[in-house]
Image 1 (cartoon, rainbow, N blue to C red):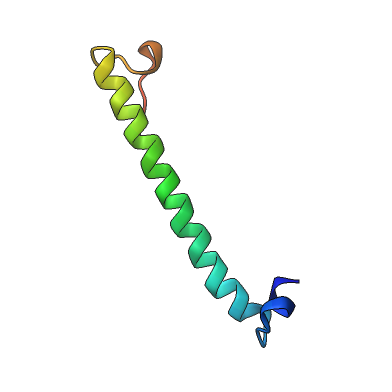
Image 2 (image 1 turned 120 degrees about the vertical axis):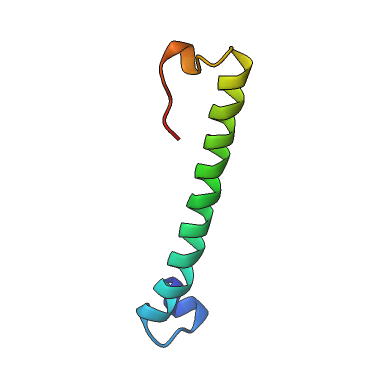
Length: 56
């Protein structure tokens, strides 16, 4: 549907554009989660997540 609305000639054009945007958004979200886990780890003396080791 997006391909048709935007007038792309093929689904490949749409997927190339929006897959990149989605991956960039996911990377940004993972970075924010990692930052939050690091902040949490610093606040509780290095234990993080209630004493459960957190891999980032």
